[in-house]
Length: 404
Image (cartoon, rainbow, N blue to C red; front, side, top):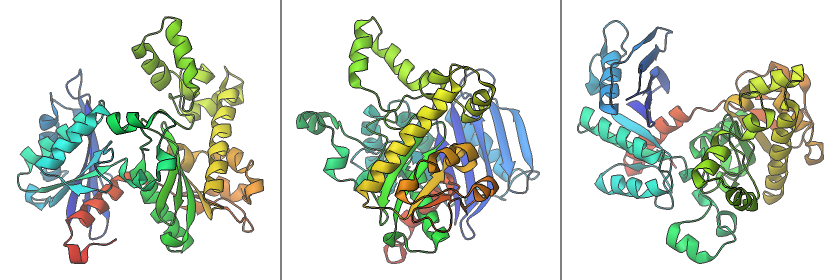
């Protein structure tokens, strides 16, 4: 089966095209600044052929037509006809409690995704717009929704409920949902393969560390807790998000004259590493360079990032009653030698010890802890697009042939 994976944002359309018989990425790319000034296309083929050009698009339908044109272009395309696109998988950010699994999209599902938009007003509407654009461009081709929140829906009430009146949960859905679920699911399965053990026998702490960061406690393939909450603002220190904060701070700032919109911008876009370091960037690479140069408060930002992550790892180790492996993934988790070293240096009490040589040499899937560590630390590159493609194939498979 050949599967087109689509991730539609408010002003972007990201795609990856897979031949699933070999789980081979055939082409990928993005159309950016849709409906804005100077829209742009980047198209990359598996063999390294790349096209970058201005994109005369005003909406997602235009962007999808442009992408389709590249896929069948005799010079740079990968298929002879768009009829070779057999299924389309979509990233959808929020499925609330309505969706505990990926699902084939029909009118009822579209309506439910729309209702979930109250919990993700910046993400679900463009996600749904991408679905509708694909339905128009590929009539009759099955579309599958893969939800960022679905993998976390195995949490028990004591993990997902907040200590506020229960009626708020009943009336407004106020609870922890968690995000990055597609990444956590992918790396949990990949970690089991790397360790050569069945996933249902493993207790894992998965850490997705990028501009957005989250951790999850995964017991025998099921999430029992995760760090993000009702929104992606909760939990770890992130590139521009504050993570955990005393709610009383918000009351205090409101009394000082800030508005709700001011607080939204402050905590989501001006906090985290960027807010603490005061170097104009929340990129961990810039933080590390500034820390080395003694610039700003980069050292404090780095220390806070590590401290919060170690706090969550320790908590999840306790909830799991011990863990088999700690998994690093995401742009920081996969590539930052100093972050991994600083975190693992704090975990000796949990039985995890750093192998510095392995840590420096790690490329792709790799162990970075010592052989005698009882808690293994491993690096697993994430691949959310492939996970979405796999989910699409699974959902569309006949029930008798459908993998668990």
